[in-house]
Image 1 (cartoon, rainbow, N blue to C red):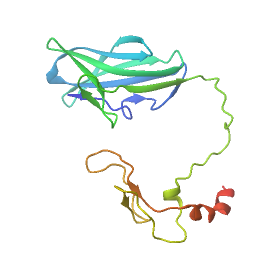
Image 2 (cartoon, rainbow, N blue to C red):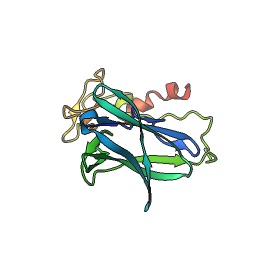
Image 3 (cartoon, rainbow, N blue to C red):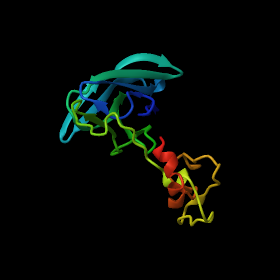
Length: 189
């Protein structure tokens, strides 16, 4: 019925600087004959509605676009509404970031940050080590938590289970001894 994925249809993806323009594209199946498409943006109790304009049609969908300037800093939430055949479809977010028709669905989140925000790490290199996937040394046997799956060291990281949901239940057995064995390598980066 609807096509929207925050990773694909919102630019830029992720948090934006104050004053930056956010572009959204929202697809509605043509057989719904939408008469209006709106974006609702909420910050706290303040809710604003913006009409989205038809931009193009492709493969049985009409795509509506809207460019918004992120004027104020804060954490915002947004959703869509589509008028069709005298009904209003309320569109919210599924766990994978895609659109779903229904009442009381979660909204998408948008963070707008201050361009003057202090960044003490600015210009520095920061590394985040995923211990489980970085290096394994010592005893190759490791305990997998209940419900988890042991993976071979050279096996790909599983992004989603068969049901399409990411559950972070794959384990590779990296450990503290593995990190300690790589300290010279890390200090040379």
